[in-house]
Picture 1 (tube, rainbow, N blue to C red):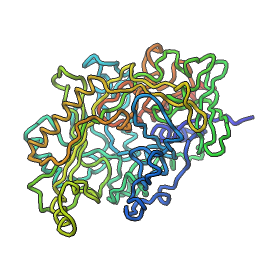
Picture 2 (picture 1 turned 135 degrees about the vertical axis):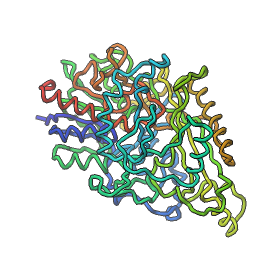
Picture 3 (picture 1 turned 45 degrees about the horizontal axis):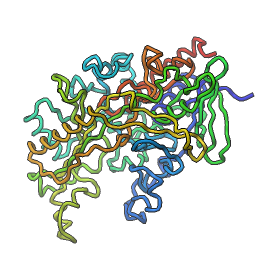
Picture 4 (picture 1 turned 60 degrees about the horizontal axis):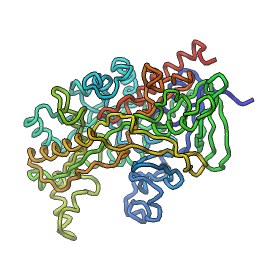
Length: 556
């Protein structure tokens, strides 16, 4: 007889990693399924190789470019999916997918922002969309626990719409950032320039982890786990309990239900051998990421669930949301020319500065609802991007570039996409991936609200640079394509009404009581804030609920 685990967790990233770890700590026997291999973060990546050690200076080999997404390079490409083996169809969308233990936490930007009380009840303020069935007070204890576990550096700014975290020491501002902050807060008192909040350990002795050594290579996978990843922080804890079984190279196809309508098992295909396997669990937890979780559930249709598992509402796949990346801008601060302090390049991702949302808080605009935030930084990276704008060649050119080391500053915007039923994904009726599994078809595009917000964000970034006396050397004012933010959410939304939502306020499927969705597919709305901290908090909360229900015998 096949072994029945207390829980089968699909995915090993933020949601899957947190859910599995918490369940293991509570004594449950957990099987984790991951579609990719497991890498050793200390030895399997060329973290500190210079570009000249690669044949194409760190860029993807031209013959391989169709295989990888825009974030991939020679340092990190081994943990991304092969796009040719994993196609998708429909309207233009950029779907960044990891394929390794740890998921996208291996290369994420580390920005760690709490949602605010207003974010959970945004519809009550402007009438757009729906409120979450939970409040900030429900999630706050889990934010606290997550931050105490993973480590978040930053500074307490006491802003109503950006709640403070349990912070480790912040990374200091560079000269350019300090100048920018001073000008902005004198001329625009409501536009706060605060320290970036990053999931990075900045002091020794935090749970035995090494503090950041300021190499500036976070995107190449942190080899000492100073920055948070599931594989570097969570899974070692789970393994130590003796309760975790990890199955790699498991491409999940569908979740199977029994005659009583309970989730019985997960069917997957071995990525390498192509053999089909079935594993059994008292509880199934989906943490594969918003779109992969939704794809699996839509593919899990049967006579009892003809529209996909747990989809009697017809909502599964609908109300997709994320952030629109409206524009970005780069400039030079003239008064800092000649200061050759390079500060800014060799430091953790997600630090720099953050300008929290200021639109539609105290006063309402007529052209759009919700708002946007800016993420930015000043100083020069290892290979300064601004150098291409400076004329010259040879030694004189190099000396001229050095004169601008401290002057460069850039910002980019992230705006909230309000969920609409029209923005949805579905299963393509014809196209399959390399394992014969039907792929997703995207019906997602920017609407009038997002485009109006984008125009305002672009006008605002230009005004900020003008007022600060910054010489603009590059500006993008066209929004990037949907998906570019990598912050997909909302396709299996939570709610109190089973006819208009997929899961309950405890992330439990209305139709299938032992099926849970722990990732951002559960989001009712996205806010303008990066989602990972909230994903981690909700996954932890989901695990608490499952363990308590298991204790009372709810799942046999």
